[in-house]
Amino acid sequence: MAFKQKLALWLIRTKFKILSSISKKKAAAEAFQLFCTPQFRSVKELPPVFQQAESLQVKFREFTLAGYRWNTGAGQRALIVHGFESSAVNFDQYVPVLIEKGYEVLAFDAPAHGRSTGRQVNALIYSDLIRFIYDNYGPINTFVCHSFGGLVTCLALSGIEHDPSCKIVLIAPATETRTAIDQFYQLTAIRDPEVQAEFEKIIVQIGGQPLSWYSIPHSLKKIQAQVLWIHDEDDRVTPLADVHKLRNDNPGYIRFVITKGLGHRRIYRDAGVLDTVREFV
Image (cartoon, rainbow, N blue to C red; front, side, top):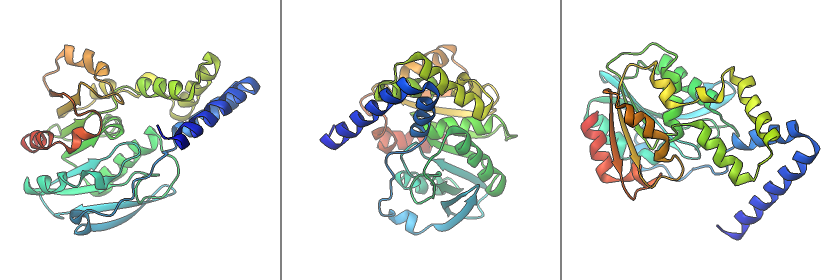
């Protein structure tokens, strides 16, 4: 970790320590705002395949979203859904594969990501965006998702009618939000149980659901689809341990592919993973 990053982290931890001593609710509110704020925005130069796309400027809530479309009018549609602090352009290698398979391909930068506007995003906003895209650009037959994108896609599909022939590719998905929040507590040194309880009350107040609802296994109970689930043993961001129970249950509609040594981000760039996705779609 670079010196500037260490200093910023020390300042954040100090801030929450002071806030916690003054007001548990205030500390929790500030923590939730930080949790929903990407600290990095990917705005690298558009890869060649994105330069060839139809550019879509889409109004969604208070946001203006950067969208891309290829092979318009094809008989079936696929949506690429990126993760937190990522961007649609990171998945350029999947576009030709999906076009080759006969899909119209759609990709959007989430609010507060890439070339879209906004400063914050959460699972409810992002999953509502997936529903918005489905309603306005769908129906969508196939979803290719990474990390946080996998969670929000499953949350969205669990609440809308969709074709049972739908296919979902989950690459290193954020399986349990409980894990992400515990990692956030550890990173920011928020150890006060009262602050943590207030933090989780905010989640219930905003969405009307307990933290356990923000779970891919929970959402999959309401989804009719064929699922390709690709996860790496060495993923420290979305740990494979969160998937153990679901794998042990061995649901027939999920094909699990477990890799080794690719971690959380290299996995979706791996040629072998791309070939597996090509075969599945």
